[in-house]
Length: 401
Image 1 (cartoon, rainbow, N blue to C red):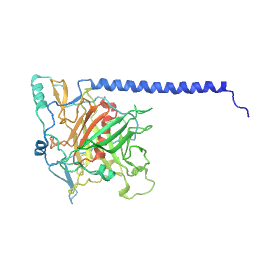
Image 2: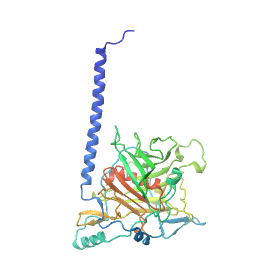
Image 3: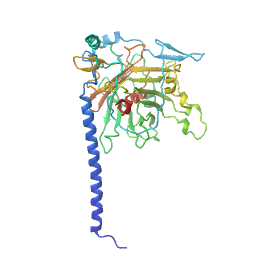
């Protein structure tokens, strides 16, 4: 057999190089356009900023103002849910499988558009400058011995778990499919890895895999611990653990092997076309008297967190919502008091509260640098729930743009 002369090889080699160069140039252009779009959004006034009055307070002052946690629930023998500290209600809708992209854009705030009258401006300005109670502060560092157990365990009562999320957009396709890393912020400045998440490719809807190993983000890996899945519009999200999907089970399963629903997140559609802070609801399973999460293992759509919430079946669930930002005339922006933990304006900045106790911050999330965000959570959330809720804020939401 005679080999082809080198002159026959060269054109194909050149074509391959040109093709790869064109693909790389296209990826670079898409990444540059995406970064320009995100940078332009962050310069818009209708973003949530940290309240300038929200300076960190001394530990003694913070501890004196700590409140008892608000969302404790348990099932009574009659099947109804009882709550200590508050009564709560919650529910949600449905979702889909997986796909699209990372950083999202602006959405709306139906109940808090820019004030039109002098009176309303004055009242909102006063609310913006009024100091709000600080979030609970940990007096000691929490220990992470068993990582899988820690990320699924609710935060201890009265202790804020302070974390940091970094977004890695380096690589061939990470501009569109970045990897997110969650680290625990320790008092000594050291960081402890907790979770990593990345959007799956070739999925019908947005689908983020979450792992306790930053080097293994595969669905079949031993480190896979849960996932976040959205509906087609990207407005409703469900958080699962690593259990079995009942619809894909090949044989009858023990109830303990079915996947748990750990949370659901719903972003209101922007029907009026207003840009501004997003309005979101978060539904999580209730808590027992011994501070353990109620297991929600749906076998069909009617048993999901979203369906229970929509159907007002709130016996075993807790409904949370984001704290409404207030308009500040001086800064011409919406503001929230993040107690010094957030430094840059973003539509992604939010605080999660319970309607019966708006001063108790269950979770807060916000930008501190281009690809760095702080994420703090309290009881009854665990690290996996809070991380997945934060990931949902990065995702594109067609109906909330």
